[in-house]
Image (tube, rainbow over all chains, first blue to last red; front, side, top):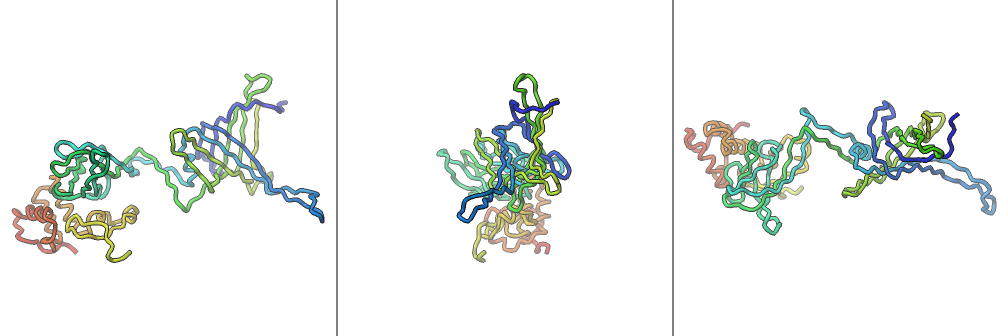
Length: 265
Length: 102
């Protein structure tokens, strides 16, 4: 009979998020750091006439699962933002903002890296010159005719901007382009984090023989990312933290917040 | 928004007008508001730009301008006025063509 007590926890191998109604896999995170499972309960003291506690009732048991993913995960961000990741393809392109700083050629033209998107003529309204001191200089505005004065022309097919003759230096151009190989996720003000089912895979070792490995699973039937505070670090060394509030499934008689299962094989 | 608040200048007639960039960012059927103040001036803009970029020839540009409302052309910026006059010069259209489509 397999009935382990003390085990060596090597690591949490992965955290998987499922849609609780369809069991569709919504996200999988494999670079888990600092995982933690916590429970809490509210205590209500019963006191006598002079305030001495004589009994304590415990109610409102709750659970929390938190971890930090070493890498930034777009699927985890989608869960945290309560949105879906939009994937571009040939029929559904995504507009990608582009900002370019380009050296102005001898003929006062600037060649863009991408074809600007937008209604004809409205793709790029302004071009700013960058001075040698790295400050902004003159601003040029789109014109349909000639590049003169403070106007420039745009030839979209050739991705070429023509500035007035004699303009030198670098040009700063901001525009959008279409991409069929991009993803996009958005955070709106009227969505909240969805409720998921979590399956957390762990690796245990037998304390007597560390070569013996056991599979461990922590299963949370109802887990919702805490939307009251979500922070995504944007520096190179920042990780991606997430905290789930664990809830009891209403229809489940057993009222399990989570199950921990360790299998011998 | 006060009636006298403007934040853009029409690329065709040079008059200032107000354009809400947030409404352009949302799904809008008036993307031309980014650069001109009316749909008629956008038609002129397209004809001139096509001619400048050599995607249409003088004859085609003149044909497009024939269907544009060129009222007030005498007050357009010099480069716009000269470009229109150059296109219409040899096309047999003397002076201003008749008003554009409704």
